[in-house]
Image (cartoon, rainbow, N blue to C red; front, side, top):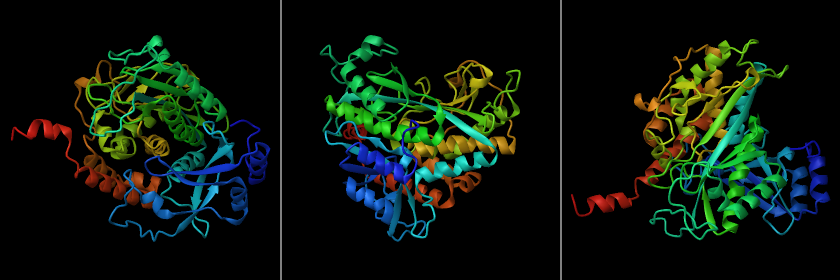
Length: 454
């Protein structure tokens, strides 16, 4: 956000009045990264800032991606209300509405003032507070992949690439193809216009390996601010796509025979006082903290894959030679590993975490990656040696399905203290409920190969 954007409630009131805003969307990211909340007239919103009038049931944080709730109540949620505190620094216009409308991301608190620790934004805040205590400041830059697909009203019917300006659907893979992106120029013009109006720091756009698969990169910056931006950007792309008669999907593996979609996360650490990158020594060599950061990622990321691959579909992405990692090796400028270290000068020294799917909740994915690196630095965990060549020739040692990831997450005691025990209990309960719901589904594969053969 620019320096003229509001940072206090008084400035937020002036911001809304100056722009003639008639309606305000108060957004709360749930565990799946879905925007929950309330929409209300601007005058009622402004009144609520003074009298704590904005509330939601706490159970919004136990809602599954299907809209259901776990049968168990892991932390004794009584479905009482929690109070929304809109963060003035997140207010933006909503560019796809005709009426002047604002959106603002809200934090959640209990009546007595304590934070709601199950809220994903608070989970990330907790991790960032640990860095602050050490005098460190994480800097991140996400790269977000997604597919454009035809409108599909039948969930049993496979997704297909959309028709572009040429009147044809893209069949072959067009990685980095300029003309392939130009097929959807009007859509991406809207995406960039919408992003500019919302102060979303999107950088480059390019075509990825899949049919009508795209990638948008964000400028590097503050972790909480970038998580907010990714949260809003997903909604923005979906709205722009619908305006042009197609779907934009951030599923990790939406199309058979095509690469999955990732959210690669570049992360580095600065000294909070000097702004210098502490992952490099003065001469440009890798620092001890750099090695330990990677060591922590290697040791702990497999234990919190649930936050990086949160859905049943997520695990279809982790296949050899499909542009997704299958183990925890690291290397310099190697795109077959989980942890890629791009060649750079000392100020740009960073690690690219290639594990996260595009389907993640960005707050939880950022929190997981930064927490694992933090533990590596404070525990002084030495990494393995960097590898050269393909990591696909090495053993697959990541979780292969959702239950495996849930089990590993439940045993990751050092991480529970960092994320908060209430969050861990609720998150695992929600994911078990989603797995149980999936178990009731009979797939087209089963009908095709088992119906008449077994």
